[in-house]
Length: 206
Length: 198
Ligand code: SF4
Figure 1 (cartoon, each protein chain N blue to C red):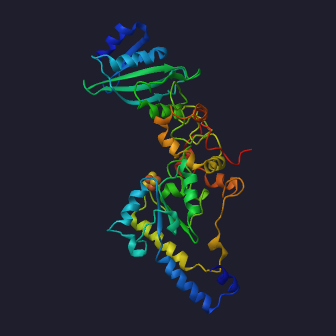
Figure 2: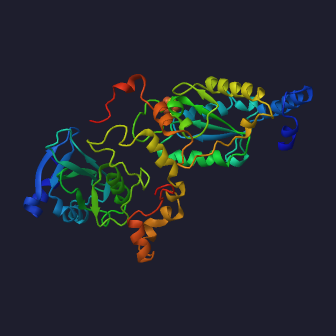
Figure 3: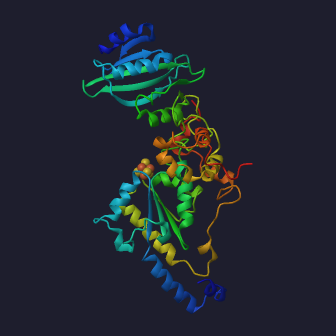
């Protein structure tokens, strides 16, 4: 078991839930969602921990509907050669929301967008929370959720219609490529518009 | 060419057929491909273009990476819905006459990807002339498809209006009636055993 877990427990007390060993021997620490940012900042900035690299953010939903949906953070300390997995449990029937770690690791930006796109988890405080794999006007839901039908919710004809009516340039515009750094500089009204994902309208929609 | 074909409409005579023959010979033997490589099939496409198989032997020396200088669109690989408007735009930008080769099981039918993200056959998006089966087709397979396209081109006539039919999208933004799309997107083979929902 990774010694970071004991250090976490002494620092954060009951904000740290159970800890278990994953099959590959890595340690998984469960953290209460409301303390996530504090725990992550501590793990990143405390000298003995120094988890300076966020490898991946993903989520897991289990077939057993009683089980929580987990958001998983893969941390690595490049200087100590150590790994730690942090999990946050969310109730899939409730609101799926957790604080964004983008302020801590800028690289979390797209990773969290992917989790949002595929699982519908909202990351509070994320600078640019939009779909990233599916196009922005995609209306069928969150494909990796267990209640999502394999072939999607709409008929094939409707899927083709919506896809063909999406504007391909809405996804690959200059805005898209430069928005990450420019987000703070664009006018507030445009920021709001981008946050709502107000692009790529369907021209044939009534 | 337009006025020529108007004047010579009606039953083809010797002049027209010779003229067709000449034009088609030129067209078939200088097809400029627009590669639209989206997945694993594109690797076989590259092998086909490289020295061992070398489709330059069949007049495809110049690959046009701009649709405006291309004659044949080769969709090598699966087409996700997100790319559907892109391939449609590429197709629309190609000048007439133009042809489309659908390379591989995925481009032709959706292949193993009978899921929410994949177009079930690019013929629901653009008209297709030759389907090359395989997962992926070997380079010989693609070359055979190209030769079949040569054969098709050599059988065309300038008088055929279909040659210049753009097949534009209708008012709903589709190229065929919705129930037809649903029909050709139906699961088949092993994927009929996949459930629509968990
Ligand atoms: S047909 Fe096979 S090789 Fe070609 S794109 Fe599909 S999975 Fe890949």
